[in-house]
Image (cartoon, rainbow, N blue to C red):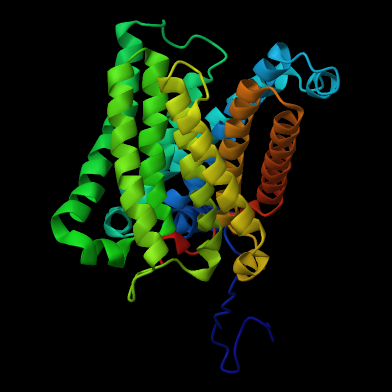
Length: 378
């Protein structure tokens, strides 16, 4: 009997199911899953707090350039050979890397605005997250002042337009934040005040220093007055620690290092306004930053829980230490003493080592770095 015939000599139908996957369908699924992973996971967890990275790198460029100038102006036989080891080309490479990081983060945040505008809106309305919206504009101002190439002609209308394009967002955020403080009163300020609010003050001081770079002394004084007036209000409010105040989460404890950055940046801005002299006002602000630095260093338990797992919040250490090192260089150039020069060298080395360590950790942990929940608004 023919095996293809049944028992009644009727043809039988043999059904064969081929479960081999179609390569085209697999590729399509992979493409969809990668797109969804990028949009919902990476962009969903991305936030303005990542601009801490570009801010720390851009400040490092300023530090390296200041050290190169300090090397050229220094005549100390003991300090000069050490600083001669710092190659000028390194500052150019660091500037290029900082620019690439800033562009990459800006593209990521633009895509976040496109796909997750509701989260961007929540971040803008949050008492902690809104402060990090100052960071990209501050990074641009640092890069503008430390550019190794002449991007726009000095004193030209293009340079002026570039400065205003970078400063106008800072002014708009100032009106939003300081306007709420002024209109809603001290109860509102006591509720929303947190160490991250100092970024708004620092942004105005960076703008003041950049205005001097443009040759606009009056505008620089305006920004300096605006920043320092609100710094006094914020500093007193944070010291009082009103009950019910919305602080920061444990993982954001490195933000306390911004207490160092504000007076340090104030000393640098005032030094620029006074024609590059590190006068009494600049020295007072520098001494305040040194005191606050020692106060934080003597309390390592404050950061113990935040240091258990690497996060983007660790980059909060880089920028304040770099600004403190820059202020110490300005102080050393003014007083010209061995102790001041040694202090500037030590703080600069600490700042470089911290930034280098953060770059290494960020490279190793890059997968987990961009898949972290948004702690800047919690």
